[in-house]
Length: 262
Image (cartoon, rainbow, N blue to C red; front, side):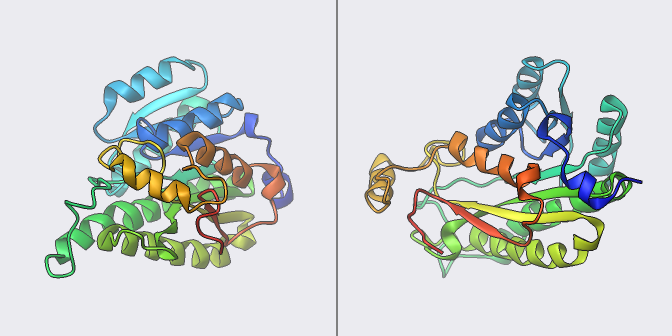
């Protein structure tokens, strides 16, 4: 078995990376970032088969499109097994990005008097249960490899709830807690667990319903005077997966142009 130190030093171009929700929106930028660096990438999708296939075809030797609902443990396990069979190596980096049935539409969001447990449960199942499933499915392979990387996608709405998306923000807050407890639990295995928290990104499928004036307002409040792009956000995931971050775990890095300074 490899030592944790050796596993944590795996270059990006030798990694097998699973990106959940990797076919569209932010997920496609995350997948492309790792593919650009030579990693072998599993492009997970639930209902975007054509987009996943088209992205995988751009890198036929290093990309694999796999349909799996991250809320279903059996489907996730099958996906991880298919990836190892295809690439001849276990998944050692997981990017938990999948966002189930959500749009950043402030006009259509549940308000305090209309929010239901079903709204919350929908986001908790996609965000927290989905991440738990991918982590547990990939743990055996990471342990065989001597370590691994888990990168969770969060939000800066914890610190700056400019729009009170109750269900989305609560689920992401729970994922931040899970990030930190998993970091503590899995550290002895050489597995790091971190979170990247962006603000509204200009533009993804999920933020396509956001009015331009909202983007402009957010941009005016940042030191950079612009809204972070999905590609800029995705590049940060490369750091957490790279050997340079081998001693970083349990952290939440806010990537929003300085709107929130934590």
